[in-house]
Every structure is written in C-alpha cells, then in structure tokens.
Image (tube, rainbow, N blue to C red; front, side):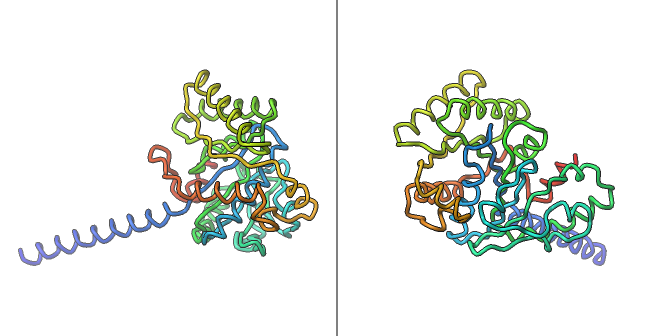
Length: 294
C-alpha cells in the first residue's frame, strides 16, 4: 500500500511538473508577438512603416524579425538596399534551412526575404511540411515578428492578415486608399469578428487631417459593419521619406527626430504595450504556419 501511495504521489508530482513546464513554455511563446501589416491598396507606405516600426522596436531592446510576406511585389529588400541570396522559396523546396535565409542588417533587425513561389507551400508533401514546421522553433528567439503582407484582398493576403496576434491596416487621406482600407476590413471581419483591427493613417499634412480621416473611417466601419476599429495613430507626410527611399535607407535610421520618425517612435511604443486579445490569441509562429496549411 505504501509503495502504491508513493507511486501515485510520484505520478501526480510528475503531472504537476509537466503542467508547470507547459505553462512556462506557453508563457515564453506568448511573449512573442506576431504583427500583420497590410493595406487595401498599394502605394500607401506599408513596407516603409513595417521596416521603420521594426527598427524603432529594436531600439527599445526587442529582437525583431521582419518577414516579407508580400509575395506579389517584394519591397523590403529594396527599401533596405539589400539583396538576400536566399528566400523562403529555398526553404520550401528543401535546398536551404530556415536559419540559412535569415539576413541580419546593420539596423538592428533581421529580415526574411519573400518567395514569389509561396503557393508551393500548399503543395508540399507531408514530410516536407513537417520538416519546415520543425525549423520554426529557431524563430522563437524573436520578441517581435512583423509580417509585411501584400495589399488588396487576395487569398494569401487574407490568410496572413487573419493569423497574426495584431492586425494593422495602413491607409492615407487619399479617398481611394480609405475606400480600399474599408474593403479589406469588411472582408477580414466577415472571416473573423474577433480580430483586433487597428489602423495607422499615413502621409497626413497635420493632426487635423489625421483626426478627420480617423473619424470618417470609424464612422463608416461602425455604421456599416457594426465594429469599432482602433486608430493607433498617424505618420506625417515628411520630406525626409523620399530622401531616404532614394538612398535605400530607413528614414528612422537616418533621422529619427524628423516628424515621421517621432510618429514611428510613438507608434512602436504603443504597439509594444498593446494587450493580447484573449479571444483570438495564436501561440507562436509555428501555430501560424500550421493554420496556413489548414
């Protein structure tokens, strides 16, 4: 009887240790935030904001990875003036390991270049998928993973937008940009009402214009979609931006004290302090990719 009782205690103790380890592992993974950044149309500055937000977060001590998930028109490497030799397509095909394609930059962020052949992902054989998913643990070292998604309402855009922990839509005061932003928000909410849709209004002339656009968007989405969007903030139209693009350098890196740079700094701090949505939490990048397969 004593042996049986001791055995039961040992079994219960093992179960408790396993549960504590699971909770610890979950806690560690929950500290990683996946941020999906998209837009209703191209040309609104989505990639520029993605990169500069990442640099600002890295400046605050976060380990940041930017994954170029715009598989139709990759711009991350162009804005950074980098041409990585390998990208996700090489991993999908099994010719490179995930760690081989991570490109470290002098800006404090790492990047993974996009793959024009991303659709191959859905055609992978089961053992290829398992091999790819097993490599994703190597990305657990990052605090923040920013997915620079394509613009519009294609299937890939919607998939990536829906799976991140945070979804940020970029728009501008241009009427077509506002209309297209509303369009993608409508589609995303039709897929999942539990997502947190947040908006950044880029290229504003002054704070008055930013507030006017914000109120217009909030009013339209509330009236027609019965949903309250969160306006994260604004980024000023700044002459430093085209200069930085021509130099193929991030504007926040060149002049973090310019008007747009100060906006990015404030936005990065706000995003880092956002609470997780308990109704919509996806744990870690591995679960993110598994959902892509599903």
